[in-house]
Structure formats: structure tokens, C-alpha cells
Length: 291
Image (cartoon, rainbow, N blue to C red):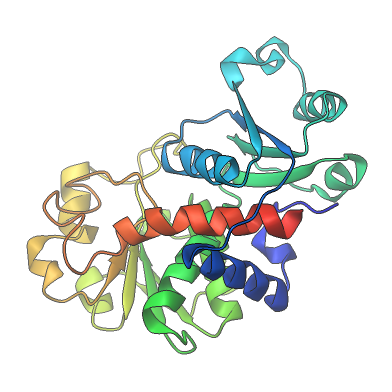
């Protein structure tokens, strides 16, 4: 029985297997899995939840949904007891998104007869998005060893960054970050960061790919930037900066004219649409890998 809570639990050969399966699915692989999946999303989601749901159904997996407001967690039930209930009801997979950090989790995964898939837990991990981003970059570049990837924005609260930087480093990419000083964590070296930039216009020539991140206001306990307008001027993808950037990504949702100029979200240098499309194939691969 396997679960996917954090990319840090994956060995390189396991990541390569997931990417191999994703490539096969993109090329038309057909597979049926006789299983059931419950989606427990305590935070809003469009891309991730629908992508997990569509990929499950295309594999023949029966899907069920319950939101936080519909579950007994609003009555005080613990997350463990919710999972224990789902185990007793006979579900095979539980795909969850929760606002808190699920750590430590080893005892939790060992004590449950469930395949748990983390679709985002607080500021901790978002493993499927990291795998999607890695798959998208490998598809574009082939070999990513030495590739310079720059994360821009709210690094401090980003589970996408924490997951993605680890996998990129695993495959030899170089990772940089840029954003307001208030939104750069202190332990950047421990997170795999090679370069910390204070000025975006200085960072762009260094980067082969830029990953813009949104300001996660729902996780911010104080005002980290003076205004969204000033933030966009300093760290957003403007039309002027578009000329300097090579390629760029965003895990979504994009806050237009805060992260990226509204006319540039799906421009020629953008890989955002490809990220969303690749989500189906990578998440199919995750289901099969855990089965």
C-alpha cells in the first residue's frame, strides 16, 4: 500500500517511473483500474480537483466528492477519524486538500489501508503539481540538468515551490527565487535554492524558465506588500519584462495584473496551458503508480 504525501518520499527511479507512465498516457496508453476514489477538498480548487477527477474516471475509477462543509469535520471530527471512516466505507484512494500542514504523517499512512494522495496541504507540499511542472519542462527541454528555474513571488507560503524545487534539484536543475524580502523564507539553501534575487529585472537574464506564484493572501497573517499595484510593478510579468523572459509557467490560479499582465497569461512564451493539459496524464500516472 503506497501513498503520495510529499515528493521528498520519492526516489529518483520512482519519479522517472511516474514520468514514463505520464508520457505513455499522453501517447494513448489505455488502462483500467477497478477502484474507488474519494475527493476531500477543504480548500477551493478548479484545476487540481477536476484534473484528478477526470483522470480517475478515464481509468475507470469510481469517483465521489465531499467538501469540508459537508463533512463531519465541521462538527469537530479529526482528519484521522475522517480518513478512518473512509477506510471503513471501502474507498481505495483518498485525494485530499487541507489548509493545515500534514506533518509528521508516517504513522498516519502506516495505520490506514488507504492510498492517500496529497493535493495540497497548507504551505507544505503539492506533489502532483511538482511532477506536472517537471514533466512539462522535460517535455520542452529533454534534459533539465543545468536548467535555471526562477520562482517569483510568494515563496514563503508556496507549497508548489517547496515541492517543485526539490524535484528540480533531484534532476540537476538550478533553482533561484525572487520576491519581496518579506516573502522569502530564511532557510533558502536548505530548500535547494542556489540564487536569491531582490530585483526581478536582474534575475530574468539568469533564468531559462520563470515560475510565477500568486500572492497567497489566505495564508498571510499580515500585510507583506504595500499594495498589489506596487507588487505587480516590482515583481509581475509586465509587457516590458515579456521581452526579457524566455519561457514562463504558473501553477494557477493566475491573479491577472498582479502576477502576470492579463494579455500575457497564454502568450507565446507561456507554458501555463500545457501545464494544465499535462495534469491529466501525470495524475493518471500517479493513480497507476500507487496501485
